[in-house]
Amino acid sequence: MKTIDCIQMSPEWFSARAGVPSASSFDSIITTKGESSKQKTKYMYRLAGERITGCKEESYQNSAMQRGIELESEARAFYELTSADVKQVGFCLNEEPAYGCSPDGLVGDDGLVEFKCPLMATHVGYLVKGNLYTDYLQQVQGQLLVTGRKWCDIVSYFPGIKPVIIRVERDEPFLIKLKVELILFCESLEEIVTKIGG
Image (cartoon, rainbow, N blue to C red; front, side, top):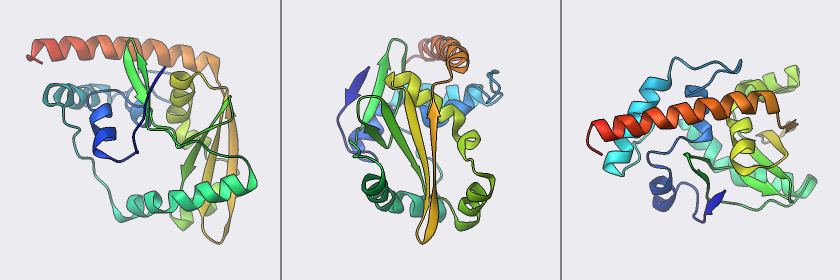
């Protein structure tokens, strides 16, 4: 794994991710059942365009998403106070084939942490159900695949309400399926880029 040192959401970070399949979008490649996603062709075309232009296409961001980004530092401070220190990273890259992830932090030698700062109703729903993993399965397992780490703490945080922290271990059978899908996806992506003149 190669780590690209940059600040997440910076121009350097967007540049590093342009045209590279990233764990936050692995749900466009594979379903939670380990099957090929129907969204993968559209995602592949977008990445091909980014690869050719060298520019990351702007994605939709609503006020709730912006609020989540702004609350992440507060969630990180809470986690560090109650659980463990977090080392922030830029972009982690598997080089051959090229796919990557941007975990919210590395924890010790074996762990990752992923912060979610959803709307109040969503957070309360996570508390009631006691789980938020299924909403982020592909992203979290993808991060574990790219980094080689053993576990990831998923943290749902909303100020003034009890947080949800779920520790997720590596799911090796799913990771095998994910790796196969990523290899096939990256091969097809290269063919498209070559075909349209990248």
